[in-house]
Length: 42
Image 1: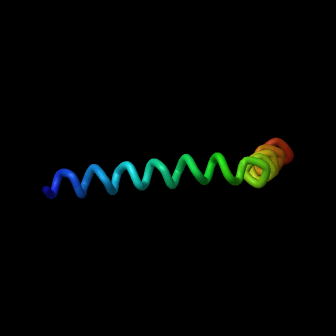
Image 2: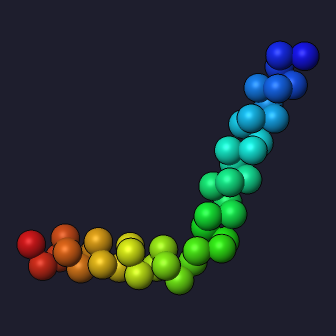
């Protein structure tokens, strides 16, 4: 039973991570590009 709960939590974390990448692509892109530009400029 504990293993099922552990697996469920792992899957939940994975789904959350995927949803962040799927639902915030534009925002993520701008943040990443700003980070890269900051690195290139410095």
